[in-house]
Structures are given as C-alpha cells and as structure tokens.
Image (cartoon, rainbow, N blue to C red; front, side):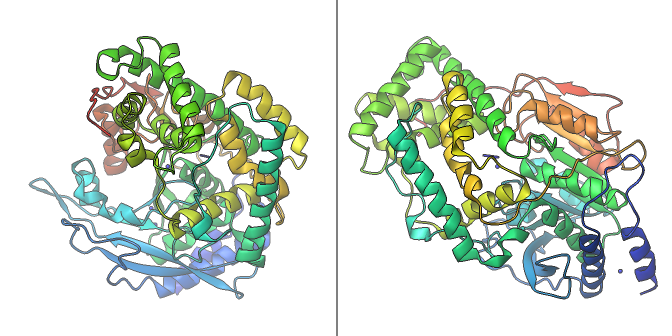
Length: 529
C-alpha cells in the first residue's frame, strides 16, 4: 500500500471477556496460542500502565505551541504472542490529555482516542499534537489524543533492511516500459533487499505483521486503562483496525476507518497493489486535466495530452542530465506521485515542471532531490516491506509479476512498474507468510463503525471502502464525491468533519450511506514550488 488506545477482581472478568470466542457470524480468529498471549500481555499492561514523561525530540519534537501535558512513554508487548513470557519489545507512545474546553463550554472527557496514520511503516507519534490544529480542537476537548509508533517503527524495536546511507540513492530511472536488462537488474536488487532484511533484522522478522499490530493495539488499550477502544486509523491503519474489530469486537467503543483499504483476503496485498496502480492512473489524469485548465498560469498545454507530453519531455531530459546531479526520472515520478495522494501538492508540482521546461531547474530540485540517506526513511521502507510480505502469500515466480505488470502498464503506465519494484522483495521473502484473516462481523457483534472515503482516492481505491462497509455489519460509509485526497477526516471538507464530530463526540451515525460534495480544488499559483 503505497500515508490511537487499553486488568485484580477485574482481571478475571477481563480474562473471560478476552478469551471469548468470536460471535457466530465472524470468521474464527487464527492462533489460539496468540489469543492467550494477548490476554496475558493485556493483563500485565493494565497492571503496569504507562509511565509518561518528557518526550524525546526524536519522537515528538517540541513545536512553538505544543499542547500542555504532552508526554511520552512506552508499553511492552510480546515479540511473539504465542510466547508471551519470551522476548518483549517496547512501543513508544505519546499522549496529550483532553483539554475539557470546547470554546467557552466545559465538556466531559470521553477517554483516549488512539490514532494510526497507516503505512505500513508510518509513526503516529505526532498525533498527540493534533489538538493545536483548529479542526481537531473539539475532539481534543473530549479525548486524550494518543499516538504511537507500531512495532518496527522508530524506536519501537526498529527494523532495517539496508544501510541507511544507501537508501534513497539518486538519480534513478523510471521506465514505464522497462527493458529485459532493466528488469533483470531490479530482480537482483529485490533479492538482495530481501536477504538484507533477514540479515539486519534477524529471526524475529516474521513477527512484524498486521495480526500482531492488531494484538498490540489491544495491549495498548489495556495499558491506557481503557475498557473499550476508541480508534481512528487511516489508510493501512484501516486494515489492521478492521482486523482488531474482527478479533476483539467487544473491545471496540468507537472506530473510524479513514481511506479504507480493501480487506478481502484475495486482495492482500499483491492484487491490492495492482488495483492501486490502476487508480493512480486515474488520479494522474485528474491532475493533468487540472493543469490543462490552468494553462494560462502554467503554460504546459491546454489539453491533458499536451501536459503529458511536457512531463515526458522533462523525464527524457532528466534521464540524459539529472537536475542538480540528483533529480532523474525516478525522482520526478516520485514528486508527482505524491500529488496523487494530495491535491494540495498540485500547484507546486505544476509550477516546478513549468519552470524546469523553461530552463529553471531550481524549483524541481527543491521539490524532488532526496536528502542524505535517512535512517527514518530506510526504517519506514523496511517496515512497509516486512509487514506486507509477512501478511499474505505472494507470487514467487517472476514470470507472474512480469506478465501482470506488463499488461497493466499498457493502460496504467504512471505508477505500475514503480509499485512493482517496491513490492518485488516479497517474491523472494525469507520469512513464513501469514494467511490473511477473512474480516467479517455479523449484526450486533460490533458497535457501528464510521468509514470515510474519497471517491477518487488512488492510494486506497474506493472499491475497498465499499467492501469494508459490506464486511463490517452496521458500519456507515461517508463518501466525498469527485475528490481524491487520501484521508479526509479532519481535512478541509466541513461536511465530512461534521459526520466525524457527530460520531466521535456524540456517537451519532448517518442512518445510511452519506455523501458530501467535494472540497474546493486548489488555486493555481505559478510561484509555488
């Protein structure tokens, strides 16, 4: 997928609740030993709590208006839930207490809101700062805002697959129809990367997966002292949020799944990435259409095909002579790929392309040139790869990848091969694979879940939100029509945010599938770069 919270006399009751079998309509959860291990870990976490203290700047840097009470701590979880008395790892956690003030009103605290931004490989530690943003203040009044770094991320038992100094090397190529020689090179690199993950991360690599991310979430819930979890997940966070809902339905209080990914086991993760590449082609078309409609500003052509021709000229020129020595076609493609996630990036990318084609490479270099090798970036890539490769079977025959991506690239050339190369280490993965859980809940088994989705989201195609809505009985879907921002809760759409507030603050859901008009498109600005 290429974008928060948690047992004495209560202990026996907790053990009974945690150990209860899933209700009749739910698919049986695999791993009885892992379920017992989760119970043990949650009981321990409830007793220990979290010792919060000052945050390490590496986790949550102080900002000019940091919220009062911002604190960080850690919670211990088993590396292997089948062996809760064995090796443990510590997850870093951030928290800001509920302010209790919504404008001039005093509001009651509703507990902790735990957030995950997705990835896999992204840290949610920054979420504790969300209350400094106007759109989050009503929620911050009623909830402790809790972020955390999932296993493998940041200082939470970090994973690594290669020397960070080598990560993000540039310039690189990005052929939309790669030669056989180029394919052989990328296959060799994927094999080397998979070997590096095993060598640098050790035998525990197999335990970094979505099922364990869901189990960790229940231990975090217990450590925070919450009987039931209020959780908001975005992007990949919606997937293991859905796993949590299926595995621990009685532990859910409220749950928001924003930019929902497709939980169908047949999609996890090989086919999901093919679907994503097809969706990015549509979003790239939206961006080119926007540029063409603002030809008076960017002078890249008055039709999407002319804009594409300009992009292709820039890529060819960068292949011959990388801008600033670091920006080649690969870096150009990556900069424009981010515009597929967020239309707020459209003006800066269009301006940089326009300037480059007219002889000024500086805006493009500023946007697209990678910095020095980053341990954080390498770590994020390692966790992404480990979780996706561990989660499910992948084709192990290169011929299957070559066939499927060659076909797709004929109609969706923009992201197809870039996405394939990113995931190809999974074909040669050295650790055992999981079988994806068939996420389903029956009527009354789970409190109603709020699902948010943009109709033209490329990173989480809209069909995934529809499938999530079908599988979680009683869930409600709110759609932002004709829009493609990846993650819409707490964004610029007032209609979407009203549904979010109604649910989190009052427990109110729309009676049926609801929709909102799209937020305004960005204004063109040739100076933005």
